[in-house]
Amino acid sequence: MNSKLKVIKDPPSKDELSNRLEKVRLLMEEENLDYYVVFDPINIYYLTNFAFYVHERPFILVIPKKGIPKMVIPLLEKGHFKLRAISDLEFIHYYEFPAPEGENWFDSYRKLLENNARVGIESTMPMGIAEKTLGKIIVSDIVDKVRLIKSDYEIGRSVHACRVANKGHKKLLKICRPDVMLFTIFQEVSQVMMTKIIQDIPNVNHYATSTLGAVWPPSMSHDPHIVPNVFQKMEEGGPHVSIIQIQVDGYGVELERTFFLGFIPDEARKPFEVMFKARALAYDLAKPGTIMSEIDKKVRKFIYDKGYGDYIIHRTGHGFGITNHEAPYIAEGYDHKLEPGMLISIEPGIYIPGLGGFRHSDTVLVTKDGNTKLTKAPEELEDVIIPL
Image (cartoon, rainbow, N blue to C red; front, side):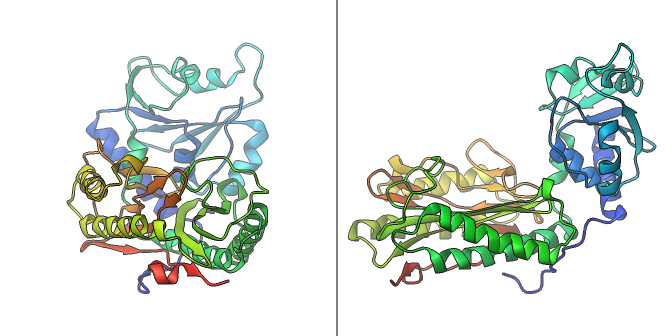
């Protein structure tokens, strides 16, 4: 990890959130929008610092091209919102849902818009809210575009989250031994990470915080998204694949490694080597100005040429930010350039049924000259064979 990068644990300042709002409004101006309506709780969190779960009582943020944004919220959440929200907002409360005619959320919401206005909405907005939206509707994911490039503050928060992930992964490798249950690993690793989070951020928002520490043993590591039995036991040999995925007070990162317990089976050496070299190629290519789809194509071709093309089941990488899976994507079909300030994973994988999965993943910052890893764990083959 680059030691010069700041570690930031504090909540965003009003200036930080104002800068995000200003970027949204610049894109609104480009698209000639009078209003932009935000429903996605992730985007509301990004713009206000308020995190919540979606349920039948909707939260809706209405951003006019000028003036203070208006937040439509249920009365039940008034205290919660004011405790956590940092940006300047005008609150519009509705009592309950369902409610008598004239007192529903949509009655308050529709008063904030105009029939002749150009109104931007997210592509993920539910149909039920879109249908209650006045004006000429333009679907545009403006906030998602703003989130692509991280500010120095966001990078600092991600650096801190990576420190938590590093600590969790170190504990994972220490306790992972043959016959240890997945439940034990999850429990102990999650406890280590959550303890550090609370020590570092006593007022952490648990709506925007989660920890996962797990290991897929070789009998299931060929299937990275399988839902395991928590009593699954670790095995001798490998490949095992570790998984650390966390969100620390709203900032998501990940750290994953292929490793072996006691010894490496002979048939696992070549696919590990191919994965490792494909990963190195991806790092060499991941520089500002490079088209992300081209990175994925070249990495996939390398793996195909080595004879493992039938065992590729996912893209080379994805983005991080206030979640641990978001744009940008290092994937065929995503023809956008890498830019400094983007946070990505680099994780080409090979998955062979009957043998196992081979994947290292890190949280990586794109810099003006190239990239730097924010997570840290053993990488070389001799360092990922854990003696028993």
